Image (cartoon, rainbow, N blue to C red; front, side, top):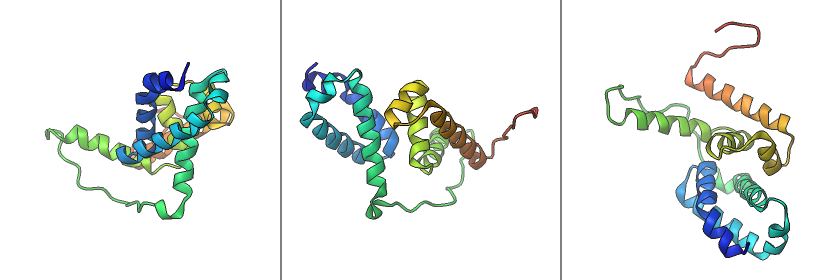
Length: 165
């Protein structure tokens, strides 16, 4: 498969993954473009790999993590959100989704990446482990911690082993 064929077929999915990882459409476009530019230079090596899509996704996740490590790119997180609209409001569901995305963006990089790869890219734990260069057990641990943190912040009841809901 040529680089052009790969970008034509997988480009929109890579951009969607970047958008979910970053939470910002413009930064996602920049991130995807940077990663594809680096992938182009090494395309023979990448295309020769068993699963080039896993390799490029890993590049995308790593590039996003590197961007967050730069001190100048930090965003200020807030503790409170605007008032929640009533359920009858037309924008109520959109406001709930927006609030959830704010909570997801506040998660640590690895936990956010695991949730995005698992629930939005619909990948199994073994593939996510390859992308993040960790074990499947670590993937499950990140997912468990991320979901527990989201439940805590949303005020949802949590259950522990041995207890009944």
